[in-house]
Length: 281
Image 1 (cartoon, rainbow, N blue to C red):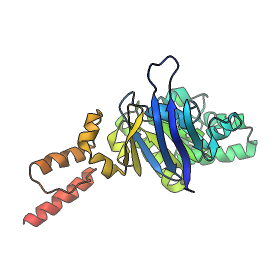
Image 2 (cartoon, rainbow, N blue to C red):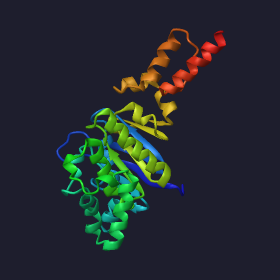
Image 3 (cartoon, rainbow, N blue to C red):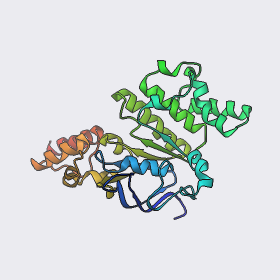
């Protein structure tokens, strides 16, 4: 397919001295501009997959291609990491400077971007994540959500085609999680940046275009959020939950309430219950 920006073909990966492979025969494609969520319990292989997409790890078998570049090709290592920016779980691990603007500049300095171009990119990146007012602030004084937005700005300044977020909201409080996810979703919609969103929060995955569920180092389920989350029994077998409203809808259907499949959000539940109440009058 012409619009495929990431291709994973028959990939296996085994950590040194590990008895079992972390990934076995994984194949998937990510389309340009797609927002893909990857779900899985701890040890399912989802974080290993994320690091393979950024060439932090190389496959033991199979191939990973990012923006047409094979991650095993040493010549293109930095090209791949420029094209596929990575956001990690702990924002403190990504902060390298004492001033926000300098932190965003770090990657550009390593690339040798001319000063005038660097200033323009920094300003645009901070504006895109709505952190312009904090450009001269000390990162350690920011909230967790704001720190992650600074990390995202540093990636945006590199002008990537893909953002890979490895549990980027796991250490944040609910408001910080909402803040970071909202920023990423807006960049996906407005700038067409492809997003691979590794998470264990079902409500976050429900906002994606497509979900891949990992289990024991393999892809167990894939499809649109409504399709995946309707497979409640299969998800629970894999020690995963479903969005609260999907769970409630299943319980209400079991009690005889004729609710349709595919309910994911509070708004959708409210709408369907209101329809039932109107029909009963």
